[in-house]
Image (cartoon, rainbow, N blue to C red; front, side, top):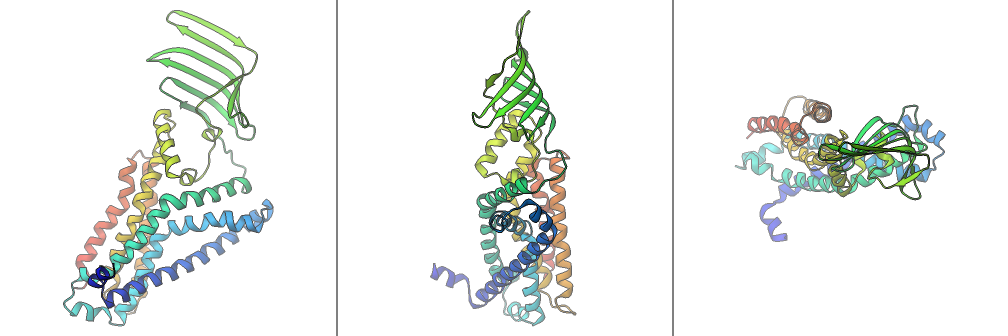
Length: 367
């Protein structure tokens, strides 16, 4: 390994790598402090009213809050770090001697690519394995301690449980885990064979079963129909959970990859309208870290030229472009979940747009 590194990475490469990673770590720390301070100021009343202990706030809420927002802002942090130290190198005339020594611009990019690869790997691993777990901590804390007056339950829910079973619930009460005006229909092909109608259905948390109360059961066999009214309760096992009827922010971001894949398969059968959201979340975990490379190319191309006025202009333009990337990424999410655009295509839209722009800047960069 040492021989390999000595062959491809020289003293100047290690100098740039240390500058890159050092500035990135410093910027990461600054953003961590800023986001935590602003969040404390915003939620201080919620913390006091909820009665949560300092341990819960620090090791549950902020243990999920900090990784979530640092991952969200990673493109901005990475971009600012590149702009800061590269523009400073250019301003101190450190880049000109490198390019004048017959080193190509692609050779000059080598330490940047190595550093960006390290950040990309960390971001990818975090997106797949770490962020879902920390998001679960944050979401559980918010559900337990942050309450508002909004209705957390869905209404008029239609759901397909399997190839033959469809259910409908008019409304759901999350506090009592009770659904009202419950209908379950079973089909063989296109023909209905059974229809069950109940005033309400409740979930037993201990038995992990649903209890149907006061229901009518209608069986259909060709032209023959039988209907029976039942005044007693009936326990049944249905492939649905109370969470399926509740509205929870960031619910999919708090799912592990295995749980997310299982829910995607269920959503394909149920047709509840949540499939697109979950597919976008899955694809985005793999694609979002690619922004590290794209913004690295844009940042180096913009800031490697010495300009009058120091690093102010490149830094200002860089921050503007990076926020534009985040805005486009959010718009892609809306187009996918609300506009019907394919999730796989939507997650690549920001990288494609800014990738083309980065390639243009690369061609115009000083050689």
